[in-house]
Length: 146
Image: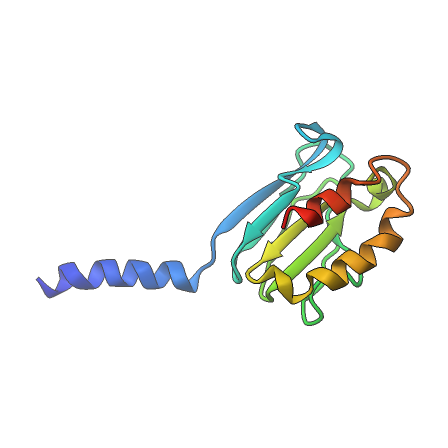
């Protein structure tokens, strides 16, 4: 009888110890337009991981300097390669596809309490979006949805 009670408790502890896994596709075209991450806005918990899946070739995922929490580890994936990132700090993370950043191929992940650095990311986004040749409001829309 004791073993029957211990098993569900161990399963719950395992869920707490290991974060959830999420997938973001890197696409030439998706529901939100061209040169897009799907989903473009993701809300997750601290400890969760995200795999950026190279669904279409010639894309990567790279964190944007000044647009992630101050203690967070930046990432820079290779072209046409999946990359998995585990998020250990609460806050907002903005990222891009480096070769398609001019086309506003960006995304946002809110980890835990997004308010931690949301205003700082919004302020930093002004410089980033000035380089967009299309979809200038995309990043603002993503940030406003948090």
